[in-house]
Length: 210
Image: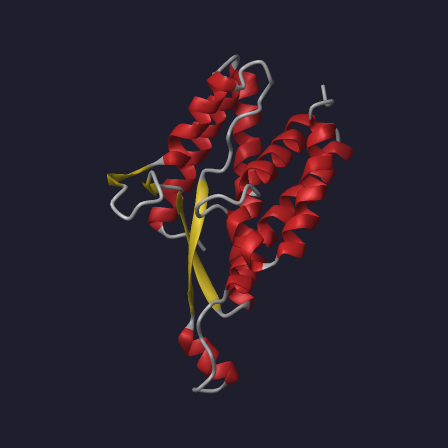
């Protein structure tokens, strides 16, 4: 399901997020958080992969990078800035008083249509490009499953897991750059609004969890 580059990107993200959240306060908390982050990213990626498959496409997961720093054409970094790797650590400094609340939008995805599958299913002359709506559906699938996992974690007595799922959904729903939220926002504003309302409700409860 994941190629070598994707596996490396996911493992790096898991380690960075776990370190940023816990600062290795204790090894028990660290490994509990490590397992939680692993599952959170796993279900998010799995949902996207499955939906993209049924939309006759395939996605590739990678760490979020910024290529420009302004609105003018020449305002580009000489090298892409790995925002997904640095923002969790930076945000820990900013949000330090709020327990486990760190920037968790670290991974993005690129998508390409499976032209041979499209031709087989719908005819050789069918439209094979992915629209913004399709990208939004793929991104929304991951967010929705994270919100469902948060509810399940809360009901089963795993408050840390529930809280981290909400935080992950919140940061990834932000309509910025290449994040999931941007894809959903421009793909289908109704779906984005629905997920945003659910996430904000969950965020309110997350701050109240012990």
